[in-house]
Image 1 (tube, rainbow, N blue to C red):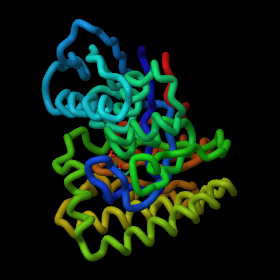
Image 2: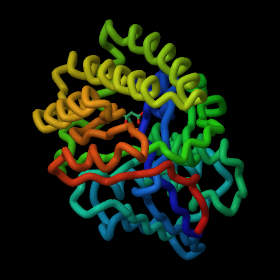
Image 3: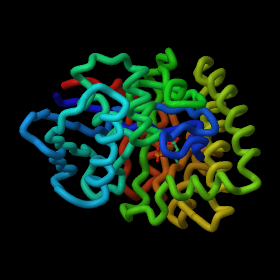
Image 4: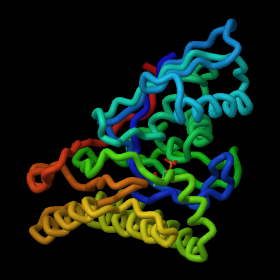
Length: 308
Ligand code: PMV
């Protein structure tokens, strides 16, 4: 079976785990799946194999292969599939963009590996979460909420029924360098900081406001809430001496602020890396892209994970 899942970006971020090994978070998050970047994974089971044979982006070894090997063992613990498999996974992102995503990767692996069980999206979301928290949201197209829950059974994402064809995300490729700090390690530090409880409270509040703003399709409100939430997450991360926001990110942020003063509706959000994602509507895309002199990818709202 072969599955495809698309990348999602959080408008309300997930930052910090309550149950680390099964990636149950402290707070709920909200994302949008985009149509430009995705991962395809093919899984072929074989009775002859004594171990999984994994190839990721053409490589048979390395950190990603090891992580996937462990993940397949976890899936075999939770679900009634005991066979080994050939697994070939490939990220479809512009080469050397630094945009490889664990969200689309683990959602496509879960979908392909568990295909024969005909599970619900909710169950695939739980399974994807075991690989990477943010992957729980890439099971769905459009906007999705990952309700934090308190256990494997209760922590999964669900789709939000919002149709907004004009919505755009512009990915600004600030840097293609690998991130120095893995999100999981940085999260573990943040959770121990005394400022962390405040993050949980703020993010919970932001999520409620974001839901209403999305329902009203109010781009200014959606943008402001997302931008503030992203800033709060990065402020919290920087308390640990970890900086994902670099000089080049701030240069893009300044351009966004200037555009806003001239009436262009553009807001930003950032994840565990230096790239900036701009939240806007289709009619502003031309003006925004014109002002930015590094590579951009303009994305619309993307589809759910599927067997292909
Ligand atoms: O599940 P991970 O390790 O990809 O964590 C992702 C964390 C952020 O991207 C920073 C926020 C989010 O909710 O996607």
